Amino acid sequence: MAKATIRNEIRRLRFEHGEMTQQALAERVGCSRQTIIVLEQGRYVPSLLLALQLARVFGTTVEAVFTLEALR
Amino acid sequence: MKVILWAVIALGAAFGVLYLVVRRAQRTLPPMVLPPGEAMPSTALQRLAWQSLVPIFLLTLAAAAVVAHHGVSVAWENDAVRRSAMGFLIAALAVFTYYISRVRIWIIRDDGTLDERDRAILASAPAGQAPAMMVTLAAWMIGLIETYHASHLVPSVFLYLIFWSLLMVSVLADLAGVVIGYRRN
Figure (cartoon, rainbow over the protein chains, first blue to last red):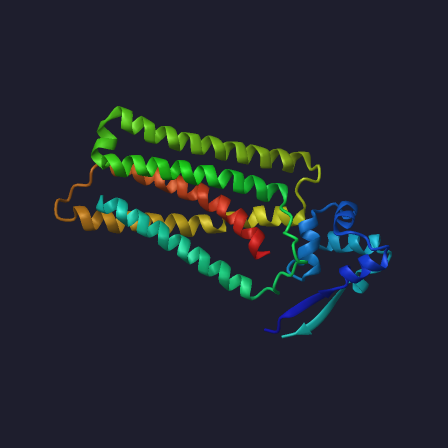
């Protein structure tokens, strides 16, 4: 079965939003800075709730933050 | 003493399997890249798990050392030796009780100490308990059969040792599951 990978734009969006720190973003969405780090590096796939919260902080849609990259 | 050696081999094998599983899982994840000089910040649950795992491991090791040093039959017959070994184990369980209580308080209060990733790691942490206990039990059975097969008599002290070893392996595997969870996810 083909395996999908999820790419995210959190790092870019943070910098586009006044160079927001990982800690500041973590506080705004209610998670730890470690979670933001592993999210940015694609090592953790967030829940729909966290994905929606991240999109809201950046004033965009979930699809603009997370994209289905490729099927392996 | 031969039985203790089997238990040590079993624990070594269990940790070896655990290490291989973690290494295999890590290969499927993208590599972690952090800016130079920056370390990965730890979470409250991660710190608590380490702060519980280390003393529990050392206390269990101390109890095993007491039993191994005096011999199984002396550890069973001599009240002072038996109580000192049990003291270490009860202290280890007290540390685990403190860990469980703190985690439960964080979960019930829902004050943001635990995020969704912490909760996911907590939920998956017990996955290693059953295999670790099965390996330990298998090692006990093989060790006891190999040692006492000819006499057909297994000393009752081994019921006590099997109980404590399974309990401590279960506790250690749960905490190790949390610590490993942060490396895997």
